[in-house]
Length: 375
Image (cartoon, rainbow, N blue to C red; front, side, top):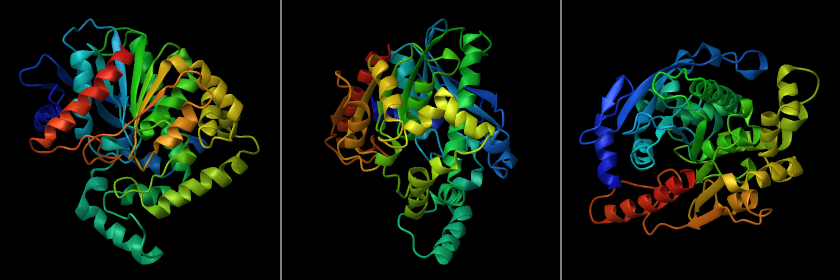
């Protein structure tokens, strides 16, 4: 597949507003499917966040393969602070085209079209950035692109967990509807695999470890630019969150989070007693619930593979290796280095010819390997 050409073509035709999108010169279609999220109550949601309607009612894209009777589904999970599907359209198209699979692009809570449109509007957000810098001093990595997430996580770092909790609950609801034959596009199946990038990999690992409703017992997970415990991530970036927000979240989960898990409440019970709650806690730091995490990941060693990038400064490859490989006889982490300028946030930049050919080649290398693993 010519990645650069496909990227530009899909960018020109995609909109979340259209119910069905035809792709020129292709049998692949995109359907935008309505979803109603079950809003968590009590300690599982921030009371102000319940008032954001975009997070409760939204549409998610499904790429349909040539064969409408395909029993394969790939769930594609995106990175932190994404506000558009554009980056991921060619990724999903590749799997639909060459793996003959339905591909679900599902937005993490308060991301992409699950957030107010103003959060990605430079004019609307620039004054929030100026106010933040004015009241808190000059902040490294502050930008209009990350100000919404930075403010929210600085105010309440538990939003990091709560967003993941709501998203995992939504995914269980969605895939249960497919398993039960109730989805409006995807035929009844239990053949669910996951391609996960960046923070989506963190979420996917927790889901696979927790295996809610036994939906993921046979699932394979292919990780790209992700896979480490939280403490080995370096999430400060102009496209993700500023340094103050990252330091606040890092400090909270490394030093304060476990201290709050006392007394009796639905949230405390969930984090202490449920498999997925314990999986979240174990993925904060290598030393936390170490035996629990390593025992499960060891059982999942044939179901997980990862490609990490050598120059990735947000989720460094050393952290991925220490999380996934040290206790396994089988090495499930590959470290690659593309021969062009890339970043964690933009591993496949759109260049003009002839540099575009290098990007096309390495995109094909990554996604062909992912397709073979998930097939």
